[in-house]
Image (cartoon, rainbow, N blue to C red; front, side, top):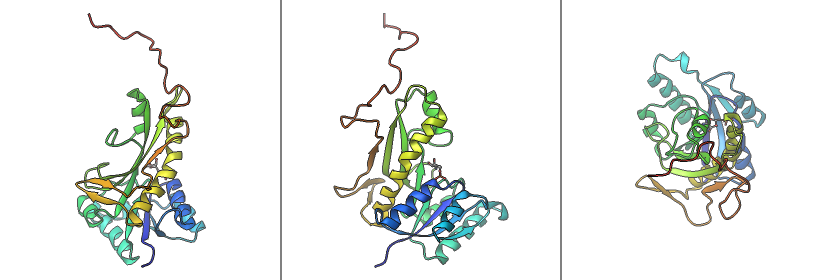
Length: 237
Ligand code: GRF
């Protein structure tokens, strides 16, 4: 049997797409990326795909009268290309349940938080606002509810003193490029088993990636966040 045929759906830069292309081409991840679809004609990821001689398609959502019509066009393009697995990588459209169910257990998404914490947008700013000590990314199988689905791989980064949303985002994205290929490998290689919405994989398949700032004992090499509060915590009377 040949390699699983993979389509990557993007809307923007496509740095995760690039990581997936490199990993599959080098043999680090199972699967072959044969199609890149964008809903935006100006997505830089399309240029990345062309540089690697991968077929591209632009399916603008605005050209369709409804989400259902847009997703029917998307589905037709995927079926035409005999796609086995779909990777959402910075694809900024919410997909309707009908479409999601057609690709059940065959569609992956990467989300920039440690799900189930922080679904939705602006995850880095929200992690900082909550005083989180760790943050990260999750690659999961897509289910009809946004940012919910069986977790394949997670990457954890420390939140450092002085971080803002941009520095934290850059640290997370760096880890995304390791996590997404690991997750695709689990699905395209047929090693992930989904049972009751929990993923299991045989020993030897890495599913947790810690940022290099963590030492092997799980502690950060430097201070994660200031441990001295501006105001002391009130003591119970
Ligand atoms: C990433 O942060 C990913 O977590 C989110 O969208 C961003 C895509 O970045 N879903 P890129 O287009 O892969 O560079």
